[in-house]
Length: 339
Image 1 (cartoon, rainbow, N blue to C red):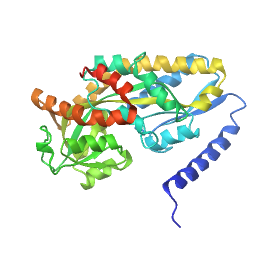
Image 2 (image 1 turned 90 degrees about the horizontal axis):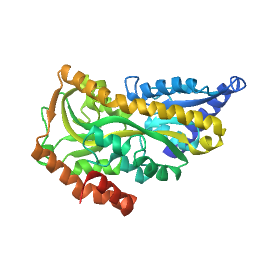
Image 3 (image 1 turned 90 degrees about the vertical axis):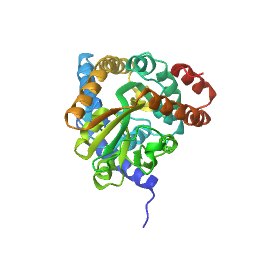
Image 4 (image 1 turned 45 degrees about the horizontal axis):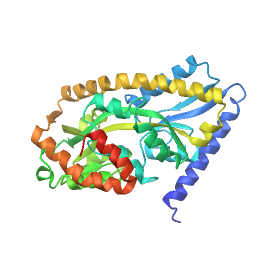
């Protein structure tokens, strides 16, 4: 008997919901607990932010507490996005899963910002992008409490390949590059001349080990560090600023008592202030760890960087405009200083 992906997802989520409901019955009388889940390892900023949030929530004297699940024990980041849409998981820190709404590919858009100062202005607390994202997320029964920074993403090559691509598309020919499984990601790396291979994050390390792919794209320094034993070079394209959503299920959020919702939001706000202060230092520290481990760090020169940027502005940005509309892309061009 063949079970489709959607049916499998429904069965898995229903089973998880039943298990979580049963486990919560005994504790619900004393206080209220809700699941906070994230799919990354404990050296990722998602984990540090989760711990900070739980401490801040206690400081707020909330009657709610988080039942924390790190490291993907409730599914990978795409699954957790879906489960939060469905209300199985009330709160998660995760990336925009465009298989559920193509407009969320906006999170991967190339060369929107090129410095940490600009990233804070655009994506940080009180930045313009949160309102834009929440208009999209509301259609998926989601609310973002804020945007979590991870760092500038670049490309890396596994051990044994012996190539260091910096001039696109000339240097990229024949290199199988893992990309996040979104249409925008595939388009970017095809435009740059790579053989783009969409692959879930959960399969990436094994793919690099076995040579299924020659390298990976969309990699901030912390994730390069996590996979350091199979990598030989890290090329700092800095083609996008990796950021994620602090998501809650919209129905769950709106059903909370107003005072508790305010306390949770206040705890999240304090956590986000901390995260944006810490993220750049964390990103730089992992870059140094990667370098000290012996992975070759390579910067694009000015000509190579400008060539890479213009390729995306000419092809990727018009593609994105067809998905999100001219109003949003007009704002994105203004942010990036593109005429």
